[in-house]
Amino acid sequence: MEPIRLSDDLVTELQNVIVKHDERAGDPGIAVQYFAAVIGYSLSQQSFPPEQKKELLEQLFAFSNHVLDDCESDQPQAPQQQNAVGKWRPGDA
Image (cartoon, rainbow, N blue to C red; front, top):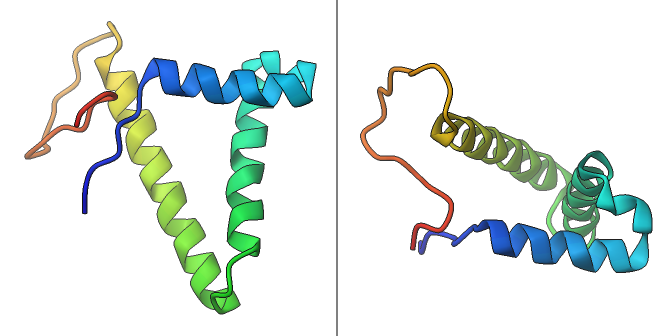
């Protein structure tokens, strides 16, 4: 599977599209609610069995958590020990 290419520009563009539909989405807290809602909405439109949808949603939460941890570790803060073999970074191809 090809890795996704996440970047600040992509996230900003996605947020800008949401802002066109709801100005409140300029607030990052509102924007991430839309992002989460889109995931739920998109899964609801699939023809998978409900159990499979829930399993995929759990995997997506774990993936989101992984991205959050990696992005936060890239920010200048107190050094954290890394035990991973590889490291995902926004913009990795």
